[in-house]
Length: 122
Image (tube, rainbow, N blue to C red; front, side):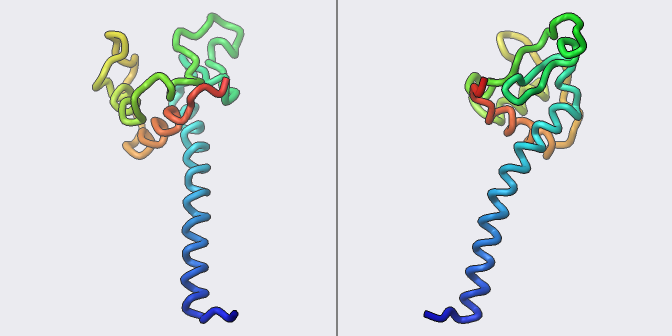
């Protein structure tokens, strides 16, 4: 069975878009992890499931005050809640996050989605 050139072009486009979406999901995961270190979340938090140690603990100093976020996605309602928490719009156990996220809106969304994807891979 021979495919027409128009159908072949359409099929190729569908395939490229599908592969592009898969790559985007992987890139977002990597980007979230990179943003976590870029914005110095590691000053207080670790993500042991991803091999990320809090700075103080990694340097042999006092244990970091923040928590290990390896399963944070299983403990909160949504990525949007994480965004709101990092912007000090909501609190957890009566406390707001220590600092306001300083990156762009897109970076905040990417970071929050990555954190929400962490659901206990300890």
